[in-house]
Amino acid sequence: MTMHKTLKTSVWIGIMMAILAGCRTAPLYNVTNSAVPPVTSGKTLTQDNVTKAIVDAGMGLGWEMQVMRPGQITGTLHLRSHTAIVDIPYSTASYSIVYNSSQDLNYDPARRTIHANYNGWIQNLDRAIRGRLSAFGY
Image 1 (cartoon, rainbow, N blue to C red):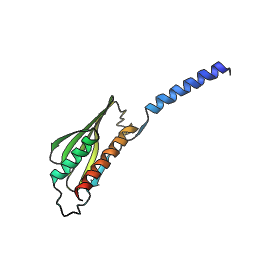
Image 2: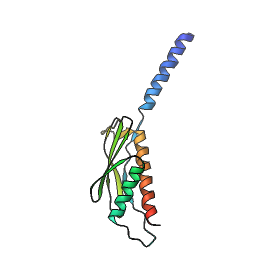
Image 3: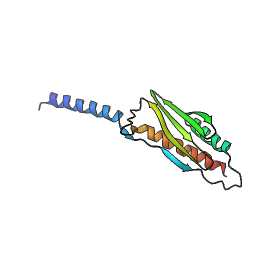
Image 4: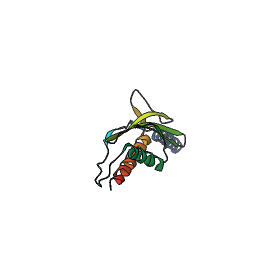
């Protein structure tokens, strides 16, 4: 193999790897019935407290949070050309973060896979919600 041919092959392989790395997918991650941390300060946790904690946590991470009705929030995250929409059903005992829809995230409903960054966004949202709820009890 000539030096020129080896260089062309290396460049082609590098381009293909970059394309594939940009399209990496992972199994869809949902948060299901995550327990609301117990309140230890003697305060009473209300539905409004949980609503505020979830909305504040999402907004702090750049999510648009819309209270649809008591016990149901829809979160929308726009990053560059990507959009993720999740449903967040909740009570004073637990909450979930469930995939609703997306744009430009390579969601495959048959395989239940999505762009790997989506899972990180959901994990960050979950941590932020748990942090806000935990802060209420102290």
